[in-house]
Amino acid sequence: MTGSAERAAAAALDGGTRARLLAEPSLILQDRELMRALVAAREAEFGENVIDIRGRAMEALEHRLDRLESVHESVISAAYENQAGTQTVHRAVLALLEPMDFAAFLDMLETDVAPILRIETLKLVMEAQEPPAPPSAAGALVVVPAGAVGRMIAAGRRAPRGDDIVLRRASAETRAVHGTEVRSEALLPLNLGTGRPPALLVMGSLDAGRFSPAHGTDLLRFFAQVFRLVLIGWLRE
Image (cartoon, rainbow, N blue to C red; front, side, top):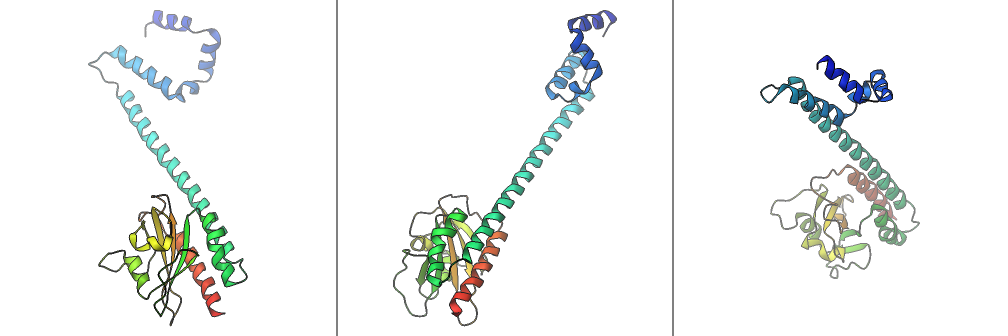
């Protein structure tokens, strides 16, 4: 910039603004849009045949900073969600310990625990040694014939899925258990010990994305372990 141009630019700024910028140049450096405008003005002086490497480097750094900020926000969001999920499961576990008899325990699953977990259905499925009546979803306890738990977990798959937690879209195999419309479900197998048939804790949600195979199962596994121990305690009485 020539001397006359510098004097013209200085005259265009009022005295207070110019003095402040000279005293605190960081005001310009911290403003991305202002810095971008300054770099663009500088490149315009050079002409189309000249590339300012500093301007290109600054653009690359801006893109990288944007990506880092996005990752940072995602990490913070995930941390808050994990914390909120942990607190929710802890409240549900405490609710499991409150009932004074088995009937109250079963009633509490639908009246207290399901709302705490923000799900539409919470059913305890237990196999009977003798053929029971058709599954009824009138209460939290659903008694099914022997082998039904395995079929629910497999959901038509030829290969067995084992005894791990299953998160998926709602399946036709569990429609009668839920007793109402759900779009996604979680199946938590329960091993009640030697001599007892397998059991299953079934959760249902109207939110299709609530239970997805891509989600983690640590909190659900903890809840299932506590539920199993509490249930075994009631069965021993």
